[in-house]
Image (cartoon, rainbow, N blue to C red; front, top):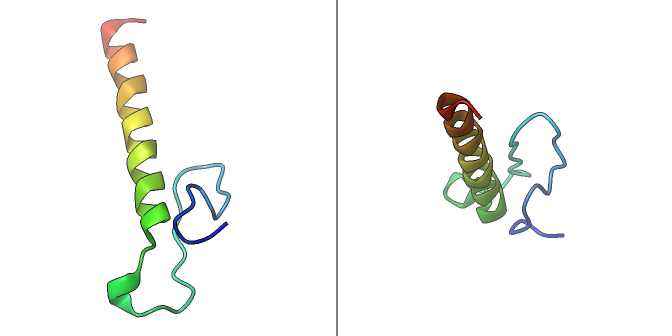
Length: 54
């Protein structure tokens, strides 16, 4: 499991990122960015369902 893995930090309450003392241009890791994007999409989908009354 490397820096490109999704949810590699193992959070259960939302997306997290860990830089492990890398230079700022390399942080956050690609996997952390993708995890946050997927989490945001999931929240948006749930919100759409509530707005539609499902």
